[in-house]
Length: 481
Image (cartoon, rainbow, N blue to C red):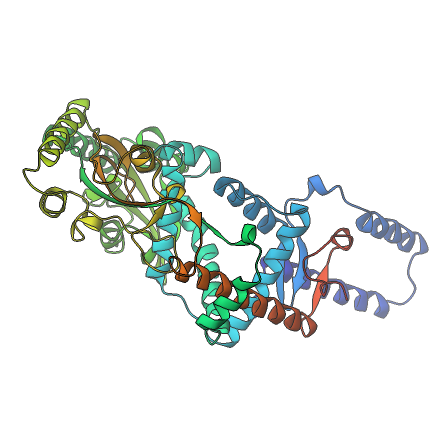
Protein backbone atom coordinates (compact mmCIF):
# COMPACT_ATOMS: atom_id res chain seq x y z
CA UNK A 1 0.00 0.00 0.00
CA UNK A 2 1.54 3.35 -1.10
CA UNK A 3 0.64 6.84 0.15
CA UNK A 4 1.90 10.18 -1.13
CA UNK A 5 3.73 12.57 1.17
CA UNK A 6 0.71 14.89 1.01
CA UNK A 7 -1.66 12.20 2.33
CA UNK A 8 0.74 11.27 5.12
CA UNK A 9 1.04 14.93 6.06
CA UNK A 10 -2.74 15.23 6.15
CA UNK A 11 -3.02 12.15 8.35
CA UNK A 12 -0.36 13.52 10.70
CA UNK A 13 -2.11 16.89 10.90
CA UNK A 14 -5.41 15.17 11.69
CA UNK A 15 -3.76 13.22 14.50
CA UNK A 16 -2.36 16.43 15.99
CA UNK A 17 -5.79 18.07 15.79
CA UNK A 18 -7.40 15.16 17.64
CA UNK A 19 -4.71 15.33 20.33
CA UNK A 20 -5.22 19.06 20.75
CA UNK A 21 -9.01 18.60 20.98
CA UNK A 22 -8.59 15.98 23.66
CA UNK A 23 -6.39 18.41 25.62
CA UNK A 24 -9.04 21.13 25.46
CA UNK A 25 -11.72 18.77 26.80
CA UNK A 26 -9.57 17.99 29.81
CA UNK A 27 -8.87 21.65 30.62
CA UNK A 28 -12.42 22.49 31.79
CA UNK A 29 -14.10 25.90 31.00
CA UNK A 30 -12.94 27.59 27.78
CA UNK A 31 -12.96 31.29 26.87
CA UNK A 32 -15.99 31.89 24.54
CA UNK A 33 -14.11 34.54 22.54
CA UNK A 34 -11.31 32.05 21.92
CA UNK A 35 -13.86 29.50 20.71
CA UNK A 36 -15.53 32.07 18.45
CA UNK A 37 -12.17 33.17 17.02
CA UNK A 38 -11.27 29.54 16.44
CA UNK A 39 -14.63 28.99 14.69
CA UNK A 40 -14.00 31.94 12.36
CA UNK A 41 -10.52 30.61 11.58
CA UNK A 42 -12.00 27.20 10.73
CA UNK A 43 -14.57 28.80 8.41
CA UNK A 44 -11.76 30.63 6.59
CA UNK A 45 -9.77 27.40 6.35
CA UNK A 46 -12.70 25.56 4.77
CA UNK A 47 -13.68 28.40 2.41
CA UNK A 48 -13.29 27.70 -1.35
CA UNK A 49 -9.69 28.04 -2.49
CA UNK A 50 -8.64 29.65 -5.76
CA UNK A 51 -7.44 26.63 -7.80
CA UNK A 52 -4.72 28.65 -9.52
CA UNK A 53 -3.09 29.13 -6.12
CA UNK A 54 -2.91 25.38 -5.43
CA UNK A 55 0.52 23.88 -6.19
CA UNK A 56 -0.66 20.27 -5.94
CA UNK A 57 -3.56 18.35 -4.49
CA UNK A 58 -5.22 14.94 -4.44
CA UNK A 59 -8.11 15.16 -6.92
CA UNK A 60 -9.19 11.49 -7.04
CA UNK A 61 -8.62 8.41 -4.92
CA UNK A 62 -8.97 4.98 -6.55
CA UNK A 63 -8.74 2.14 -4.04
CA UNK A 64 -5.84 3.32 -1.88
CA UNK A 65 -4.11 5.13 -4.76
CA UNK A 66 -4.27 8.95 -4.94
CA UNK A 67 -4.34 10.85 -8.24
CA UNK A 68 -2.54 14.19 -7.98
CA UNK A 69 -3.25 17.34 -9.95
CA UNK A 70 0.42 17.29 -11.02
CA UNK A 71 -0.05 13.81 -12.56
CA UNK A 72 -2.80 15.17 -14.78
CA UNK A 73 -0.68 18.13 -15.87
CA UNK A 74 2.33 15.91 -16.60
CA UNK A 75 0.21 13.57 -18.75
CA UNK A 76 -1.27 16.53 -20.60
CA UNK A 77 2.21 17.93 -21.33
CA UNK A 78 3.61 14.59 -22.53
CA UNK A 79 0.55 14.06 -24.72
CA UNK A 80 1.08 17.47 -26.35
CA UNK A 81 4.75 16.59 -27.00
CA UNK A 82 3.65 13.29 -28.60
CA UNK A 83 0.95 14.98 -30.69
CA UNK A 84 -1.91 13.14 -28.90
CA UNK A 85 -5.40 14.59 -29.27
CA UNK A 86 -7.96 13.88 -26.54
CA UNK A 87 -11.57 12.94 -27.27
CA UNK A 88 -13.92 14.97 -25.11
CA UNK A 89 -12.84 17.31 -22.34
CA UNK A 90 -9.17 16.68 -21.37
CA UNK A 91 -9.91 17.86 -17.81
CA UNK A 92 -12.23 14.85 -17.50
CA UNK A 93 -10.68 12.25 -19.82
CA UNK A 94 -7.11 12.57 -18.49
CA UNK A 95 -8.01 11.88 -14.82
CA UNK A 96 -10.26 9.01 -15.97
CA UNK A 97 -7.43 7.48 -18.00
CA UNK A 98 -5.10 7.72 -14.99
CA UNK A 99 -7.81 6.14 -12.81
CA UNK A 100 -8.15 3.20 -15.23
CA UNK A 101 -4.38 2.77 -15.09
CA UNK A 102 -4.60 2.62 -11.29
CA UNK A 103 -7.06 -0.30 -11.61
CA UNK A 104 -4.60 -2.24 -13.76
CA UNK A 105 -1.70 -1.31 -11.44
CA UNK A 106 -3.63 -2.61 -8.45
CA UNK A 107 -4.27 -5.92 -10.22
CA UNK A 108 -0.60 -6.10 -11.30
CA UNK A 109 0.43 -5.77 -7.65
CA UNK A 110 -1.90 -8.64 -6.73
CA UNK A 111 -0.50 -10.78 -9.58
CA UNK A 112 3.14 -9.82 -8.83
CA UNK A 113 3.78 -8.39 -12.33
CA UNK A 114 7.33 -7.01 -12.56
CA UNK A 115 9.32 -5.00 -15.12
CA UNK A 116 13.13 -5.13 -15.31
CA UNK A 117 15.33 -2.02 -15.14
CA UNK A 118 16.74 -2.80 -18.61
CA UNK A 119 13.21 -2.80 -20.09
CA UNK A 120 12.47 0.56 -18.45
CA UNK A 121 15.76 2.14 -19.57
CA UNK A 122 15.29 0.96 -23.16
CA UNK A 123 11.79 2.43 -23.35
CA UNK A 124 12.87 5.74 -21.81
CA UNK A 125 15.69 6.06 -24.36
CA UNK A 126 13.32 5.28 -27.24
CA UNK A 127 10.92 8.00 -26.05
CA UNK A 128 13.66 10.62 -25.65
CA UNK A 129 15.22 9.78 -29.03
CA UNK A 130 11.77 10.03 -30.65
CA UNK A 131 11.38 13.55 -29.25
CA UNK A 132 14.89 14.45 -30.45
CA UNK A 133 14.22 13.12 -33.96
CA UNK A 134 10.97 15.10 -34.18
CA UNK A 135 12.86 18.33 -33.43
CA UNK A 136 15.33 17.70 -36.24
CA UNK A 137 17.92 16.15 -33.96
CA UNK A 138 17.99 19.16 -31.62
CA UNK A 139 18.42 17.97 -28.00
CA UNK A 140 18.37 21.59 -26.80
CA UNK A 141 14.84 22.12 -28.18
CA UNK A 142 13.60 19.11 -26.22
CA UNK A 143 15.27 20.41 -23.05
CA UNK A 144 13.83 23.88 -23.67
CA UNK A 145 10.28 22.52 -24.20
CA UNK A 146 10.27 20.54 -20.94
CA UNK A 147 12.56 23.03 -19.15
CA UNK A 148 14.67 20.06 -18.04
CA UNK A 149 17.95 18.47 -19.09
CA UNK A 150 17.89 15.13 -20.93
CA UNK A 151 19.39 13.58 -17.79
CA UNK A 152 16.58 14.97 -15.62
CA UNK A 153 14.01 13.80 -18.18
CA UNK A 154 15.40 10.27 -17.87
CA UNK A 155 14.92 10.39 -14.12
CA UNK A 156 11.43 11.87 -14.37
CA UNK A 157 10.30 9.35 -17.00
CA UNK A 158 11.57 6.29 -15.11
CA UNK A 159 8.58 5.70 -12.81
CA UNK A 160 6.08 6.65 -15.51
CA UNK A 161 7.52 4.10 -17.94
CA UNK A 162 7.78 1.48 -15.22
CA UNK A 163 4.05 1.91 -14.60
CA UNK A 164 3.23 1.96 -18.33
CA UNK A 165 5.07 -1.30 -18.94
CA UNK A 166 3.60 -2.90 -15.83
CA UNK A 167 0.11 -1.97 -17.05
CA UNK A 168 0.87 -3.30 -20.54
CA UNK A 169 2.08 -6.62 -19.09
CA UNK A 170 -1.05 -6.81 -16.93
CA UNK A 171 -3.32 -6.12 -19.92
CA UNK A 172 -1.49 -8.75 -21.99
CA UNK A 173 -1.85 -11.28 -19.20
CA UNK A 174 -5.60 -10.65 -18.94
CA UNK A 175 -6.16 -11.23 -22.67
CA UNK A 176 -3.52 -13.89 -23.34
CA UNK A 177 -6.16 -16.63 -23.67
CA UNK A 178 -8.25 -14.72 -26.23
CA UNK A 179 -7.75 -15.64 -29.87
CA UNK A 180 -9.67 -15.73 -33.14
CA UNK A 181 -9.97 -18.38 -35.85
CA UNK A 182 -9.87 -17.83 -39.64
CA UNK A 183 -13.66 -18.42 -39.62
CA UNK A 184 -14.06 -15.61 -37.06
CA UNK A 185 -12.11 -13.26 -39.33
CA UNK A 186 -14.10 -14.17 -42.45
CA UNK A 187 -17.43 -13.87 -40.62
CA UNK A 188 -16.50 -10.47 -39.18
CA UNK A 189 -15.64 -8.95 -42.55
CA UNK A 190 -18.40 -10.74 -44.51
CA UNK A 191 -21.05 -8.38 -43.15
CA UNK A 192 -18.82 -5.31 -43.03
CA UNK A 193 -19.61 -2.55 -45.59
CA UNK A 194 -16.81 -2.11 -48.13
CA UNK A 195 -15.99 1.41 -46.96
CA UNK A 196 -15.52 0.07 -43.40
CA UNK A 197 -12.89 -2.49 -44.43
CA UNK A 198 -9.55 -1.29 -42.99
CA UNK A 199 -7.28 0.66 -45.32
CA UNK A 200 -3.71 -0.63 -45.28
CA UNK A 201 -1.45 2.43 -45.73
CA UNK A 202 1.60 2.41 -47.96
CA UNK A 203 4.38 0.37 -46.37
CA UNK A 204 8.07 0.30 -47.27
CA UNK A 205 11.18 -1.69 -46.45
CA UNK A 206 14.37 0.36 -46.26
CA UNK A 207 18.07 -0.49 -46.02
CA UNK A 208 20.59 2.06 -44.79
CA UNK A 209 24.35 2.52 -44.62
CA UNK A 210 25.61 5.10 -42.13
CA UNK A 211 28.90 6.86 -41.53
CA UNK A 212 29.48 8.74 -38.30
CA UNK A 213 31.67 11.81 -38.85
CA UNK A 214 34.88 11.34 -36.92
CA UNK A 215 35.88 13.72 -34.15
CA UNK A 216 39.50 14.72 -34.62
CA UNK A 217 42.10 13.62 -32.02
CA UNK A 218 42.98 17.30 -31.57
CA UNK A 219 39.38 18.09 -30.59
CA UNK A 220 39.24 15.19 -28.11
CA UNK A 221 42.55 16.31 -26.57
CA UNK A 222 41.23 19.88 -26.31
CA UNK A 223 38.17 18.69 -24.36
CA UNK A 224 40.23 16.44 -22.09
CA UNK A 225 42.76 19.21 -21.37
CA UNK A 226 39.89 21.51 -20.45
CA UNK A 227 38.48 18.95 -18.00
CA UNK A 228 41.95 18.38 -16.49
CA UNK A 229 42.23 22.13 -15.94
CA UNK A 230 38.86 22.16 -14.13
CA UNK A 231 40.02 19.27 -11.90
CA UNK A 232 43.24 21.12 -11.05
CA UNK A 233 41.41 24.35 -10.19
CA UNK A 234 39.05 22.54 -7.79
CA UNK A 235 41.86 20.48 -6.22
CA UNK A 236 43.94 23.64 -5.61
CA UNK A 237 41.00 25.31 -3.88
CA UNK A 238 40.81 28.04 -6.52
CA UNK A 239 37.07 27.47 -7.06
CA UNK A 240 34.34 24.90 -6.44
CA UNK A 241 33.18 22.08 -8.70
CA UNK A 242 29.62 23.44 -8.63
CA UNK A 243 30.76 26.90 -9.82
CA UNK A 244 32.62 25.43 -12.79
CA UNK A 245 29.62 23.24 -13.66
CA UNK A 246 27.35 26.30 -13.73
CA UNK A 247 29.78 28.17 -15.96
CA UNK A 248 30.99 25.49 -18.37
CA UNK A 249 29.01 22.21 -18.26
CA UNK A 250 27.16 21.43 -21.51
CA UNK A 251 24.37 19.54 -19.74
CA UNK A 252 21.96 22.53 -19.54
CA UNK A 253 19.63 21.19 -16.83
CA UNK A 254 22.25 20.06 -14.34
CA UNK A 255 24.55 23.01 -15.11
CA UNK A 256 22.01 25.38 -13.55
CA UNK A 257 22.12 23.19 -10.42
CA UNK A 258 25.90 23.13 -10.20
CA UNK A 259 26.06 19.87 -12.16
CA UNK A 260 24.06 18.04 -9.50
CA UNK A 261 22.23 14.79 -10.16
CA UNK A 262 19.81 13.74 -7.42
CA UNK A 263 19.90 10.23 -5.92
CA UNK A 264 19.97 7.89 -8.91
CA UNK A 265 20.18 4.13 -9.36
CA UNK A 266 22.87 2.54 -11.52
CA UNK A 267 20.35 1.39 -14.14
CA UNK A 268 19.37 4.97 -15.04
CA UNK A 269 22.92 6.08 -15.81
CA UNK A 270 25.16 5.45 -18.80
CA UNK A 271 27.13 2.26 -17.90
CA UNK A 272 30.55 3.92 -18.24
CA UNK A 273 29.40 6.89 -16.12
CA UNK A 274 27.86 4.58 -13.49
CA UNK A 275 31.00 2.40 -13.20
CA UNK A 276 33.14 5.41 -12.31
CA UNK A 277 30.57 7.27 -10.19
CA UNK A 278 29.72 4.26 -7.98
CA UNK A 279 33.43 3.60 -7.34
CA UNK A 280 33.98 7.09 -5.89
CA UNK A 281 34.38 7.11 -2.10
CA UNK A 282 35.83 10.54 -1.24
CA UNK A 283 33.69 13.65 -1.88
CA UNK A 284 36.86 15.77 -1.95
CA UNK A 285 38.28 13.93 -4.95
CA UNK A 286 37.29 14.22 -8.59
CA UNK A 287 37.01 11.25 -10.91
CA UNK A 288 39.11 10.48 -13.92
CA UNK A 289 37.72 11.60 -17.28
CA UNK A 290 34.79 9.43 -18.39
CA UNK A 291 33.65 9.03 -22.00
CA UNK A 292 29.97 8.27 -22.66
CA UNK A 293 27.74 8.53 -25.73
CA UNK A 294 27.02 12.13 -24.70
CA UNK A 295 30.63 13.34 -24.47
CA UNK A 296 33.31 13.53 -21.76
CA UNK A 297 32.66 14.00 -18.03
CA UNK A 298 34.35 14.54 -14.70
CA UNK A 299 32.36 13.52 -11.60
CA UNK A 300 32.34 14.51 -7.92
CA UNK A 301 30.64 12.37 -5.27
CA UNK A 302 28.13 14.08 -2.96
CA UNK A 303 26.57 11.13 -1.10
CA UNK A 304 25.60 7.46 -1.37
CA UNK A 305 22.35 6.09 -0.01
CA UNK A 306 21.74 2.35 -0.39
CA UNK A 307 21.94 1.48 -4.09
CA UNK A 308 21.65 5.11 -5.20
CA UNK A 309 24.21 7.83 -5.65
CA UNK A 310 24.11 11.62 -5.57
CA UNK A 311 26.86 13.34 -7.53
CA UNK A 312 27.86 16.34 -9.63
CA UNK A 313 29.30 16.23 -13.11
CA UNK A 314 30.67 18.52 -15.80
CA UNK A 315 29.98 17.50 -19.40
CA UNK A 316 31.90 18.74 -22.42
CA UNK A 317 30.97 17.68 -25.96
CA UNK A 318 33.62 17.43 -28.70
CA UNK A 319 32.68 19.36 -31.80
CA UNK A 320 32.39 17.57 -35.14
CA UNK A 321 33.99 19.77 -37.77
CA UNK A 322 32.24 20.60 -41.02
CA UNK A 323 35.23 19.08 -42.78
CA UNK A 324 34.50 15.73 -41.07
CA UNK A 325 30.83 15.90 -42.13
CA UNK A 326 31.81 16.79 -45.71
CA UNK A 327 34.29 13.91 -45.80
CA UNK A 328 31.68 11.38 -44.60
CA UNK A 329 29.15 12.62 -47.18
CA UNK A 330 31.72 12.43 -49.99
CA UNK A 331 32.61 8.84 -49.09
CA UNK A 332 28.93 7.86 -49.05
CA UNK A 333 28.35 9.66 -52.36
CA UNK A 334 31.18 7.67 -53.95
CA UNK A 335 29.83 4.46 -52.42
CA UNK A 336 26.34 5.21 -53.76
CA UNK A 337 27.70 5.63 -57.29
CA UNK A 338 29.52 2.25 -57.04
CA UNK A 339 26.30 0.61 -55.86
CA UNK A 340 24.31 2.08 -58.75
CA UNK A 341 27.01 0.83 -61.12
CA UNK A 342 26.61 -2.70 -59.72
CA UNK A 343 30.21 -3.04 -58.50
CA UNK A 344 28.82 -4.74 -55.38
CA UNK A 345 25.48 -5.14 -53.65
CA UNK A 346 23.92 -2.93 -50.98
CA UNK A 347 23.72 -6.00 -48.72
CA UNK A 348 27.50 -6.49 -48.93
CA UNK A 349 28.29 -2.81 -48.42
CA UNK A 350 25.97 -2.54 -45.40
CA UNK A 351 27.45 -5.65 -43.78
CA UNK A 352 31.08 -4.49 -44.08
CA UNK A 353 31.07 -0.68 -44.31
CA UNK A 354 28.14 0.66 -42.24
CA UNK A 355 28.74 2.17 -38.79
CA UNK A 356 25.18 1.33 -37.72
CA UNK A 357 25.41 -1.65 -35.34
CA UNK A 358 21.63 -2.11 -35.19
CA UNK A 359 21.25 -2.80 -38.93
CA UNK A 360 24.71 -3.95 -40.04
CA UNK A 361 24.13 -7.61 -39.13
CA UNK A 362 20.86 -7.55 -41.12
CA UNK A 363 22.36 -6.21 -44.38
CA UNK A 364 21.30 -2.69 -43.43
CA UNK A 365 17.58 -3.55 -43.22
CA UNK A 366 15.79 -1.30 -40.73
CA UNK A 367 13.56 -2.95 -38.11
CA UNK A 368 10.26 -1.42 -37.04
CA UNK A 369 10.04 -1.61 -33.23
CA UNK A 370 6.81 0.43 -33.03
CA UNK A 371 4.69 -2.59 -33.93
CA UNK A 372 3.69 -5.38 -31.52
CA UNK A 373 5.61 -7.86 -33.65
CA UNK A 374 9.07 -7.08 -35.07
CA UNK A 375 8.79 -6.35 -38.76
CA UNK A 376 10.84 -4.73 -41.51
CA UNK A 377 7.78 -2.93 -42.91
CA UNK A 378 7.24 0.74 -42.05
CA UNK A 379 4.41 3.11 -42.66
CA UNK A 380 5.95 6.35 -43.87
CA UNK A 381 5.04 8.18 -40.64
CA UNK A 382 6.88 5.53 -38.57
CA UNK A 383 10.21 6.10 -40.34
CA UNK A 384 12.68 8.72 -39.10
CA UNK A 385 11.69 11.97 -40.82
CA UNK A 386 14.88 12.23 -42.87
CA UNK A 387 14.63 8.63 -44.13
CA UNK A 388 10.96 9.05 -45.06
CA UNK A 389 11.76 12.24 -46.96
CA UNK A 390 14.57 10.49 -48.86
CA UNK A 391 12.61 7.38 -49.94
CA UNK A 392 9.22 9.04 -50.52
CA UNK A 393 9.75 9.56 -54.28
CA UNK A 394 12.22 6.72 -54.88
CA UNK A 395 11.50 3.61 -56.94
CA UNK A 396 12.19 0.12 -55.58
CA UNK A 397 15.92 -0.58 -55.94
CA UNK A 398 16.96 3.10 -56.00
CA UNK A 399 19.82 4.31 -53.81
CA UNK A 400 19.49 7.81 -52.34
CA UNK A 401 21.95 10.67 -52.24
CA UNK A 402 23.68 11.12 -48.87
CA UNK A 403 21.77 12.97 -46.13
CA UNK A 404 22.16 13.66 -42.40
CA UNK A 405 19.96 12.35 -39.58
CA UNK A 406 19.98 11.62 -35.85
CA UNK A 407 20.25 7.88 -35.11
CA UNK A 408 18.61 5.96 -32.25
CA UNK A 409 21.53 6.86 -29.95
CA UNK A 410 21.01 10.57 -30.52
CA UNK A 411 24.14 10.90 -32.69
CA UNK A 412 24.34 12.93 -35.90
CA UNK A 413 25.20 10.56 -38.76
CA UNK A 414 25.43 10.64 -42.55
CA UNK A 415 23.29 8.11 -44.44
CA UNK A 416 22.47 6.60 -47.81
CA UNK A 417 19.26 4.58 -48.14
CA UNK A 418 17.93 1.96 -50.55
CA UNK A 419 14.22 1.38 -51.08
CA UNK A 420 14.02 -2.40 -50.88
CA UNK A 421 10.25 -2.78 -51.23
CA UNK A 422 7.06 -0.70 -51.41
CA UNK A 423 3.46 -1.92 -50.98
CA UNK A 424 1.03 0.82 -52.02
CA UNK A 425 -1.92 1.67 -49.78
CA UNK A 426 -5.07 -0.39 -50.42
CA UNK A 427 -8.22 -1.82 -48.87
CA UNK A 428 -7.39 -5.00 -46.96
CA UNK A 429 -8.32 -8.34 -48.56
CA UNK A 430 -8.52 -11.79 -46.99
CA UNK A 431 -6.10 -13.25 -49.56
CA UNK A 432 -3.42 -10.53 -49.38
CA UNK A 433 -3.81 -9.07 -45.89
CA UNK A 434 -5.19 -11.85 -43.72
CA UNK A 435 -2.83 -11.05 -40.85
CA UNK A 436 -3.86 -7.38 -40.90
CA UNK A 437 -7.54 -8.34 -40.81
CA UNK A 438 -6.96 -10.93 -38.11
CA UNK A 439 -5.21 -8.31 -35.99
CA UNK A 440 -8.24 -6.00 -36.36
CA UNK A 441 -10.66 -8.67 -35.14
CA UNK A 442 -8.33 -9.83 -32.37
CA UNK A 443 -7.76 -6.28 -31.12
CA UNK A 444 -11.53 -5.68 -31.08
CA UNK A 445 -12.20 -8.87 -29.09
CA UNK A 446 -9.46 -8.09 -26.59
CA UNK A 447 -10.55 -4.48 -26.16
CA UNK A 448 -14.13 -5.60 -25.49
CA UNK A 449 -12.86 -8.04 -22.85
CA UNK A 450 -10.76 -5.34 -21.14
CA UNK A 451 -13.67 -2.88 -21.13
CA UNK A 452 -15.83 -5.48 -19.39
CA UNK A 453 -12.99 -6.18 -16.95
CA UNK A 454 -12.75 -2.47 -16.04
CA UNK A 455 -16.54 -2.24 -15.52
CA UNK A 456 -16.49 -5.25 -13.17
CA UNK A 457 -13.40 -3.99 -11.35
CA UNK A 458 -15.10 -0.66 -10.73
CA UNK A 459 -17.96 -2.38 -8.91
CA UNK A 460 -15.59 -3.60 -6.18
CA UNK A 461 -13.23 -0.59 -5.99
CA UNK A 462 -13.52 2.43 -3.70
CA UNK A 463 -13.51 5.69 -5.70
CA UNK A 464 -13.65 9.26 -4.41
CA UNK A 465 -13.24 12.41 -6.53
CA UNK A 466 -13.44 16.16 -6.06
CA UNK A 467 -16.92 17.53 -6.66
CA UNK A 468 -15.82 19.48 -9.75
CA UNK A 469 -15.40 16.18 -11.66
CA UNK A 470 -18.86 14.79 -10.91
CA UNK A 471 -20.49 16.52 -13.89
CA UNK A 472 -17.97 15.00 -16.34
CA UNK A 473 -19.09 12.72 -19.16
CA UNK A 474 -16.91 9.70 -18.51
CA UNK A 475 -16.26 6.75 -20.81
CA UNK A 476 -17.11 4.39 -17.93
CA UNK A 477 -20.22 4.97 -15.84
CA UNK A 478 -19.19 3.41 -12.53
CA UNK A 479 -16.95 6.13 -11.08
CA UNK A 480 -19.65 8.07 -9.25
CA UNK A 481 -21.31 5.91 -6.61
